[in-house]
Amino acid sequence: MGRTASRTVLSRDGLALPRAGGAETATRRLEARLGAARVRFVDETADYQTGAVTARAEDGRAEDGRAATGGGVDLDLPLVCGDGLARAMAERALEAEQAETVVLTLGPLEALAAEPGDVVRLEGRDGDWRVARVAAEETPAITLEPVGARRLYEDQGGGRGGEGPATTGAPFLALLDLPPLIGSEDDARPVAAAAVEPWRPMRLHAGPSAGALTARADLDAPTPVGVLVEPLRPGATGRWDMVNTLVVRVEGAAPQSAAETTVLGGANTLAIQTTGGWEVAQYRSATLIAPDVWRLSGLLRGQQGTEAEMRAGAAAGAVVVFLEPRAARAEIGRAERGLPLVCRVGPAGAAPGGAGFREAGFTLRGLYDRPWSPAGLTVRASAEGRRISWTPRVRLYGDRWDGEPTPVDPMRFRVRVTNGGAVVRTMEVDGATALYATADAAADFPGGPPPTARIAVAQWGEGFGWGAEAEIGLEPDGFGRNRAAVPTEA
Image 1 (cartoon, rainbow, N blue to C red):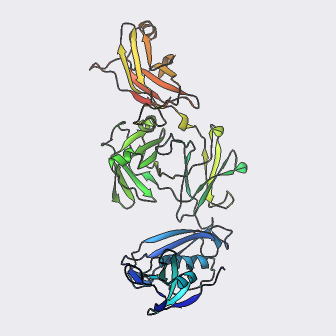
Image 2 (cartoon, rainbow, N blue to C red):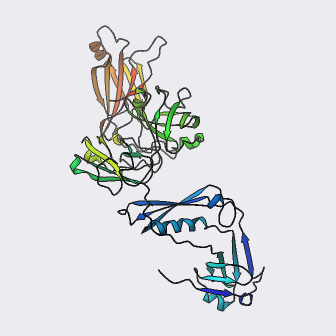
Image 3 (cartoon, rainbow, N blue to C red):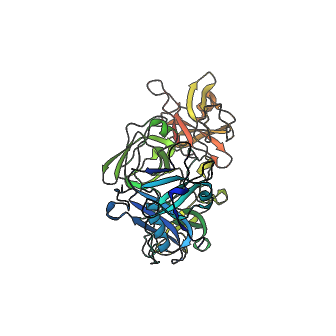
């Protein structure tokens, strides 16, 4: 296809002498060569599924004799082709960085005749050379690269990354209804996580029934996931948890340690499946303690308003999903909130059913819109009664440093007085303070408030309802302090 590469001979008589230097400049690169190249393509012999072929440097050495590093490169061909052409492209990728390039300064007539892609012979040098670049400047010049021997391959039909659902096991599937995540605060869609070995591109289907499934997400890469090897207890919030650690068996990309400032900027985020839902946490240090088993320490717990989920704790065997910046999102919107959905994930391009698909139920609660529990909840005695105050938290861009954050939820709050879990009194206020009058307290607790009496405050969200509650003891303890505020699920 296209223009046939021409072959001419460049003689020394056709070169021009530039103002500085010689007419010929040769550059030899000493870097180690790539050891492998993997090419993905649309396989015309396999129902247009994604195929993949790998070319490796023979005997650990590239064609020019230099040692191959063992490193590799991945390429995606936007082509419908067979594995023969893809394999040829993979071999060409291995030769992309040649051992030597030659830059020639040409006379005007020779420069006009040269085009990228031309194959020429160079007087005084062996072999064929390809014109890689033509610089049409005041002093024309061309860049030449040596041409290696090209082998032709016939299509073998063996380039499929997975031979189909029959040979690829059903993937792991998790759909995560999460709060706004750092770096993707504007994306309210649930996260879709899938993993299988060997991996091939996956597609998520969902619908109200198995007969009404529609495509909701394409997953181009596996999600790093794991399971807890040891139980995870509740921990501190708002500061580094230096007591608890995550011991997790990881499948997929290995976790990486990060600096404190990087973690505070949103890096190393993961979701832990606790008995109360998904806790969003972050880690600072990752240490390999056994094959595929990592200890994650320097934790930030209950991130993004998930303090209630954190306090529930997680048992050994609980799922951990590493939330990468480009995590796949499922097209499940607010209109389907509360609707039980049937979800299936399997090879992209295949009908959503069969041995290669995993099915799971999912109901969107819309935790993206759930108001976070208030901070700084306090109870102080006054002449009128007990003065309750708190500080609302802003769930979207609430940690900015260039001014006050803009509230996204109305300043409407519910204050509940509870005793042993039973609700004794409920108040609603428009502001960040409330008064539990002495007369009301006497009516609710004729003998005085017991130690189990507590105050719980939650904020209203237009797209969700009452958010997570913050709790605090109604009466001071033996040291004159109210028992600490504890965020809970409303």
